[in-house]
Image (cartoon, rainbow, N blue to C red; front, side):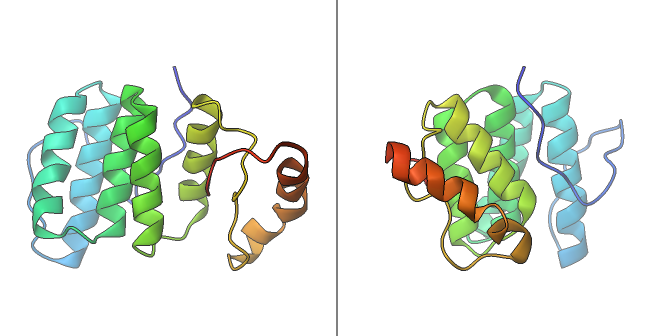
Length: 145
């Protein structure tokens, strides 16, 4: 239904079992399980899994991104958009985040975008800035990236 932009750091297995993050390396395994659940249409289970970890690690940008990705897959765009912004605000800074934000904006009808990119981002993001500035001059929308 929607483009799957989010990416996990590990290949998700077919046997999905609840995990708990006990070390930094386990976070990637949990996130892979969350993505596997989401990709199989088990959105409620995926959200429950990531919510448990977010209650223990509320400022973890990767967990916030995983939660927002599940909401995006489920078609809950407004919540996904807010979640992607939260992940960005907690320091997550990678291309997949900005692609998901852009798709969320597009699907919410905010494609015009006013504050699309902060001035300081990675080089690959900055190369898109001139095209985005044209959007800003023409439309003055309300999407933030």
